Length: 288
Picture (tube, rainbow, N blue to C red):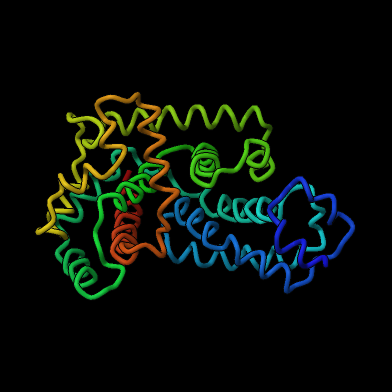
């Protein structure tokens, strides 16, 4: 009976008191963990921009959570509790790393244009991988992963947890060990900064934006596909001329919610691109 309750209600904070004095079995924990492993994996990837670090951290999170499962008292959902462990492990890794600059896409674009091997590998992925498609929507999500690394770490995590993974402010406070007031502050500042960055840089929402990589890469990887026809399918682009900046940002977040960077039709191509950007940033930040 207990396992059945966990199976259906493991994410429901309102029922947490039922389990306060109960023991969770290894089988129950493992099954529950698998329910949100995909979200946890994409969350960590969007923080680290590293596939290898993500795989290591997901495994470390599972091991640590499993070893400490007796300390789970049901004060939050199991998902919230596990995300707290993952966030702490990831913060430990990222604290020693410098933030990426807001113009990360410009820097990485220039590096890519001078890297023939990168394009050869990308074209091979495009031609041979079932996850080698290029879609503008996918690149919008990829772009956010890179640009959001320009935020202070607490702001980046708060924004991801609220806007992409839809945790409540109270839950985010538990995950990041912050007051709810600080969560709201970080969320407000992070949203404003990202709205400002994309409004000034993204040509999809501002015709004077300096970044055109979505359509440029579409032309490279999908030369037979009309970029403009693809763009009109994207709500953010449809509303670019008649909606406020906050609404356009919400549309961008909806795209992130809908795309799993590990399982989408463009995953192999975009992860290859992300690894390139990570390496470029490592070299760039060492020099600056």
